[in-house]
Structures are given as structure tokens and as C-alpha cells.
Image: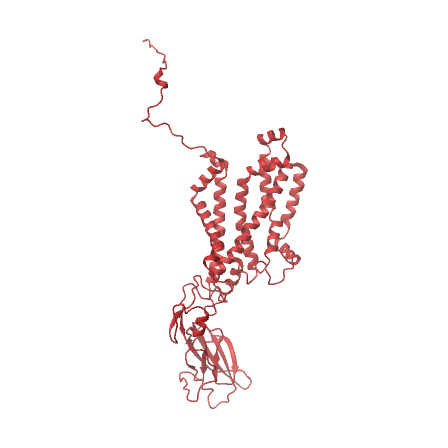
Length: 466
């Protein structure tokens, strides 16, 4: 067995000499940062949450800066473009001013392809549609006629459409809400009892949109110079179309967003703040006080929201057809605070057992100092997440109440009330329902994704796992 010699290492002066300048020092892997700086860093790494944050900022900017960029009055009506979809044809022909019509002349010729000789007199325009017919068969008495109009082709057994008039004349002039589309007019002969016979005639017409020179001047459509009869110009632009009253959808979405986002953001701030204060006091006091305060919170949860909303509308004197924004805010604040109060109470019960709280008590700190200086700041992450999750709930509540007629009332727009109006004509004018529903969906989704990202970014346990 060979002997192994060992030598002890002795440090020299060169071991303590500074590194040469050409050598790089060891870099710190992650710089020191505060809790909020680290939370912002982790939030930026969450692409969905960051995109949702920018989307929310864009929606708020859209509603606040929109009235300065798009100056159309949301209550102004464009009667030439009622229920127009986005991108619809805006061309209009200049026509002479309307002149009263007293029936066809003696040399009027009638069609031979139908039983009554139903004929169009002149042109079918949005100004007027004039019809004339020869009358009933000559071997029968003439007891009068009924005139109908519909948008759909007639099949056997179908109804004739909207009844316009019953008359003994052999002519009719229609000026009722004419739009540039296809119409089907039907004239039915009556018997001596005023009952419809089997003799009728149907005529399909395509109405052309027209406007007079005076109307074009009054609506500011002649800025490019004077116009003459027969010339085509373009009507006012409505990027998102118009509703059933001819009001600009984009302007109503902007002003409706102000109402919806105000209720959706301001109401949660109020009742979350109330819940934070209430839950903090209950959690810090503990014991019988905590139990008593939580039982009162359970009582508030049991109150029916709709019944309370109706009661508040009566108390505030809000009648049918009047806007109920104030009762809605009060009802949310009174009834929706228990959820954040319970959440904050649970956090306070955990925090009050921490060592720094006991140290502050030994140093003589008072209750309000402990709550507002130590406990609430340490629950701020939970509070922010709660607010972001409560905002979609408040927006849905406003939309639901406005949808059933208990929230924002016309003519004040909100996204919920616009959905209520749009659902009535969703089959013929789907854009009136699509756009407000789309804005509600985008806003709710953005706040939900942001709340999910904040929950991960503000969770201290996520930091320890990295």
C-alpha cells in the first residue's frame, strides 16, 4: 500500500487581486424589484391579459373621444335611410318636388296581363307609388276594392300583406314609408257585403330612392356644387348603418357605451369599496361581531334584485318609459357588496395572524391604522381582481334590465336598450342587434381575461414558483 502525500493549499495575494478589465463580471440573473413591478412584469408576459387591457383602454377611448370625432347626433333621424345596413347603396336621384295626384287621365292605358288591369302610373319612387286599374268585370257590379302591400312574393293561400286602403276609386297613391326595395301590391275586388271576392291582381314594383333639390340642400348634400333633376348624389354616410328610426348606429354605440361602461365600472367600484370596508372590519374584529356582520351579509344576499329594483323605481318616482339609471346604481350598491365583503374578510382573517400585525399591536397601533395601513394594502391584489370580475357582471345586469325595459329608457341609448330594440327586427335588419351585442360580448370577455391575468400576476405564490 503506497503512501499518499497531501499538501495544504495556502492562499496567495494573486487570489485577492481584482479581475482584469477584459473579463466580464458575473451578472445578476434577475434584478431586485418591488411586488407591483414584478406583478406588472408577469402581466406583460400574459399576452391575452395584456391584449385585453389594451382593448379595454380602446373601448373607453372609443366612448369618451368618439363624440368629438363622430359628431352625428344619436337622436337625429335620417328618414331616407331607415334600417339601412352597413355598406348599403347610398345613391339617390334628384327628382322634382311632389305634386298632388287626382287619378289617371282619360287616355290612361291599363295592363292586360291581370284580371283588373292593375298598372303602375309613372315611376315607382320613394316619393310616391301611383296605381290605377280598369276595374271589375263589366258584367258585375263595382262595389269597391281593397289594396294591400307586402315585401314577399305571394304564393297560393298566402295573405296579401299590409292592408293600405279600401276605396271605390280605380286608383291609389301610396306614400307610406317607401324604401328602395321590391314591393308586391295587390288589389282585391269586393262584393256587395264588403267581402273580398276571388278577383284580384298583383303587381311587383321596384321602388327607386329619390330626393328633391330642396331636401338635398337642407341636408347638406350639395357641398360639391348645385345639382339638377335626374342627377345622382350620395346620401350621408353611416358606417354601421341606421336603426329602425333612421338614427346613426355608430353614434348610438358611442353614447350607449358611455352609459353601459359608466354603470359597469362605477357601480362595481362603489359596492366593492363598501364590501372591502365591511369585510375588513368584520375580519379584524372577529368573534361575535364577525358573526353578526356576516349574518347581515347573508340577509342582503337573500334580497331579490328585481323586486328591489322595482321598489327603488317607485321610491325615486321613476315612471314607465323613464330612465332608471339611478335606481339601478343604488340597487347594485345595496345588494351586491356581500360577495367582495366575504372575500376580503377571508383575507383579513389570514393576515391578522401575521407577525408584523402582532408587532404593530405591541407598539400601540390602533385598529384603523392596522386595517388601512397593513391589512387592506396587502389585500389590494384580491380587490383589483374582484373589481375586474365584477365589471362584466354589472354590464350584463345593465344590459338585462335595459333589455326588459327597467333600465335605460329611450331615447337615451345603451348597449342593452339597443339590443332590446334590435331583437324586434333581427330577421330583417340583423345589424341593429349584432353591433350592440358584439360590443357587450367584447367588453365582458376583455374584463374576464384581464381579471384572470391579474389573478395570476398578483398571486405571490406564482412568484415563488419561478
